[in-house]
Amino acid sequence: MEATLPDEDVVVRVKEITNSRGVDAILDTVSSENATTGFEMLAFNGGIACIVGLPDFNKFKPFSISPSIHEIALGGAYLSGDNRAIQDLGKVAREIGQLVSEKKINPMLTEVISLEEIPKALNRLKGRHVRGKIVAQVEG
Image (cartoon, rainbow, N blue to C red):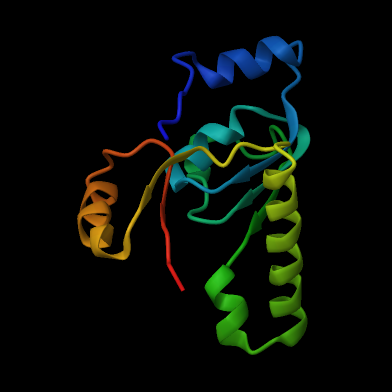
């Protein structure tokens, strides 16, 4: 299944849709660079939750948008041994799974691969030649 992505400037489009206000919340699961771009779309007092990398704070004037920034350290929750944090991760995963199954969010699934295809897919990901998500299907 091939994901189709728009060829438009997302920042410009978000500003158009929100009458230049920006959005109140962003969940960035892509990269530090993407999170930095996300800052351009935040409304004053907006929040961004970053799973992969934090934004480059040097690109923004201090006290300009008063953002709320949250680092979601998924692996850190498990390593901490904090059972409440681990349970919270499970709750988030179930809620996101529900939103995907109800087609309220698009996971941008590009391709489903076998376990044998993982090494090649990881090389493609490393080279940043993939748009969307690759999922390995485990038969069991």
